[in-house]
Each structure stands twice: as C-alpha cells, then as structure tokens.
Image (cartoon, rainbow, N blue to C red; front, side, top):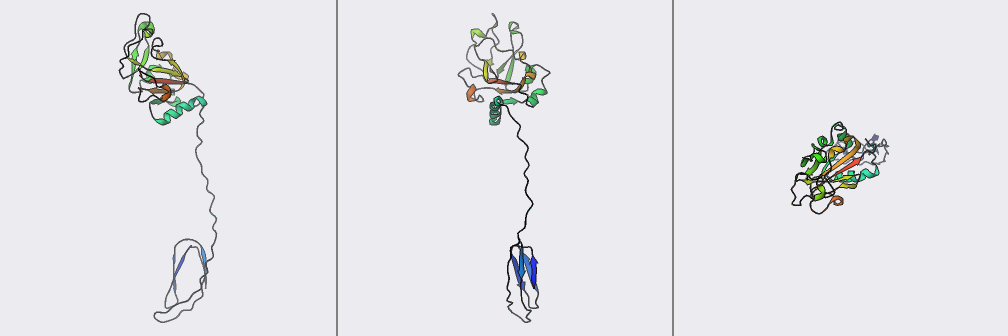
Length: 218
C-alpha cells in the first residue's frame, strides 16, 4: 500500500483486523507501507516506512513600510531634542493652526510660561519668561530708556541655532514682533532641568525659546 500524506511526522497504529490509524504532526512525507492483516490478539505488524521530504515553496514575503519624512540639516537638532522628550515643542503642523494670530497667543498653549507686558517704551508687547524665580537683579541694559521691565525670569532666545537674546543683552524681546507664519518649529525650555547642554548657562537659568525659520517642509 502506498499513501501520500502531507505531514512532517506520521504516527501509524495498526489493528488486529488490518486497519491503520494515522496521526499527523506537521509536514510533508510519502509513505510506502507493506503489511498483511493478521487476525488474533496481541499481534505484531511489521511495516517498512520510507519518508520522502516534499519541498513546499512558500509565497514571497513583501514588507511595506512608510517612508521616513525628510528632514533638513538644521532641523536635525530640533528632531533630536524632541525625541529626548524634554521641553515643549511646536511643529509646523501645529503652528499652521495658529499663524493668523500673534506669537503670544501661540505660546499661551505652553504651560509653565509667563507673558510679561513690556513698558510702552519697549512697544507694550509681551516678553517671554519662565514661571521660576531668580535672585539675579535686572541688568541696567535691560531697561527701556529709563523704564525697567517688570521683574521676571526672562528666557533666552535662539533663532536657527544662534543666540538672539540673553539676560543683560538689552531689553527683553517683544515676541509679538516675531510672526508665527515665518517659523517651521519652536522649542521651549522652562528652566535648568529642561535646558539641553548646548543652551545651558549659569544663573539666571530661566530657560530658553528656540525658533526655527521655515524650510519648506510640511
């Protein structure tokens, strides 16, 4: 008797009336078996079994993955720091929903910040400060004429990776002079614990805002 069965292992049990019972484990073999039915109790059936491997060709596996978005050279630092998870980050997609309003409105969405009204001689706009306190007094150069700004922990300002303003470098920046529509992304750090090493400084470590001009990326 010749039987072709798609298995890996074939377990064959014989009975006293010449019937065979098979159990399939898994795989593909061809079984050639010769036997005679022997009637009687406690009999032994001798069989010759030849296992022949049958190669089964599987369908080719196709792996499809979404293409990673391209990032311009200057935005690599932004993406690296965003992946680290410290600070608050605004992408172009988020900024696009707020670009019709002033920068101060967009930054209201970041917790832990203060929008400090500047004296009228500084344009009566808003400067950005962190919520922490500092014992460092305001530098004379930070005054608007003879009017000093309100006491606050004003954050450093970076544009495209270069420092644009820091404590003592003149009056605090009126952030509403910066248009939301001109920027690709914004990073905000609200104190020493969030500041990346390239923006860290001695006291007052109030934090920083880093703005990245448009690159044409979505």
